[in-house]
Image (cartoon, rainbow, N blue to C red; front, side):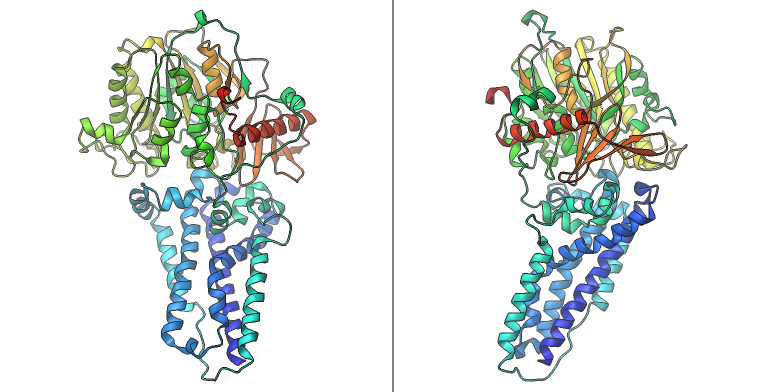
Length: 634
């Protein structure tokens, strides 16, 4: 019996030791990302740490569920030193993997403003990019690497060890140990999943603290486990069909004639990590870092209240090209809904005789873009592989992501020159992404204080080189150009020069700009609320497209619409309109506030706002689940 008591105490000590490591990871996460939680609310901070213990315990129980029973074995062989050593090392390895996820996410948080889900494993650790990404992470975030190594040493040295007892196994020990193991395992399971009808989940973090502090309350192993296998969207029905349609509809049909269709070319630039804050003409509080884009904006139809529908590139591509935002924990590209038939821009325009192509200078296969592009109607995909068929790596490859922007943009222009008009092209830049590597010849060309800002300057310079070359092409003046960022940069998470306050929605502010060369009638600075998913219906309107289509966005040139922006993060839907911001988590009271220059003021959402938001969520869930994201599937 003494061995049984000792082993039970040993298991409890080990779990408490792991809890201490997770608490340290939470404190380290806070320190490294302190600007994201400004201004600090001491009360919310305390509850984030206190409630976080519940999420830590749940993650630890899950990772260790296979190791409970060996602690209750009443048999003599458990005294074997080799057995105990192997058991300890396996437990240490599994649990340090959980710690590793927390540490990696500490650095990754500044790029996505939330804890990683199951796509963290597929995209960061087990994807085609892993060989390139992890060495870069270790190099640039060396201090995270040192912290992890230090924690591993602490675990190796102080992880509670087995104490040997040279005693015989008593007859009644076996049934007691088996019963205890079953009770402990079943109890742990219910603590892990929660005692309610619904499983304890990521969204429960909002029960304990504000949405801003939810990433601090959570831990990465918990969010990874809780989002594994969850490729489904919750079916939501708030209204009957007619009432829902009166509040919101995803079906569009413009009343143009066939003769009015413009046949203009379209080129969309998806600019890696271009925050609105980094663009001078869209930012009145501090200088910008994109002089060329500023000059284009001065001749364009630009929006000063534009928002990204997500925080990752893999979320941006379906939003921009298919007008489908990610409203669940799993990316559209990584879910079963990637097989849905959609009214994507390349597919609709290809049916109108357009040649279509997608350009991305990264490795082919990065984030599954090549497969997704094929599914949504692109004729050609030009990636790093295609570039290297005609060019060498020397001076062109950044040794991390792919081909430097200025090299790849000029290559893209050369390919487009051979296209038959009309054409639709999407060009996705890469150089303004971490680790912000610049070509050797431009390393001393920009003198900003941060590498990410120098990378922005270089990406802007690359755009300039593209346009200088393209202006002499015969297709240039017959083209609508769109500039949009995939998401904001870590620069947007820092206090600006005039205020220490960081508005949560500012972390989603991106440029959305429409530019038509030599069209002086299409020049405006609009304060309308717009979002990435608005680009598809707006472009089709601008082209005088006259067939019905499905898009979750709105035509930004329609003054009678209901301008808004939405995004989803960890169970919370954020809805932005011209009057206020609503954070809505189902089965809770919505949080509504007005945003000022240096603070927020709480208010109450109107019935019209909530009806619009709920109708959108209803329409989204029904169309995505039942594969009605194309008029051909109606």
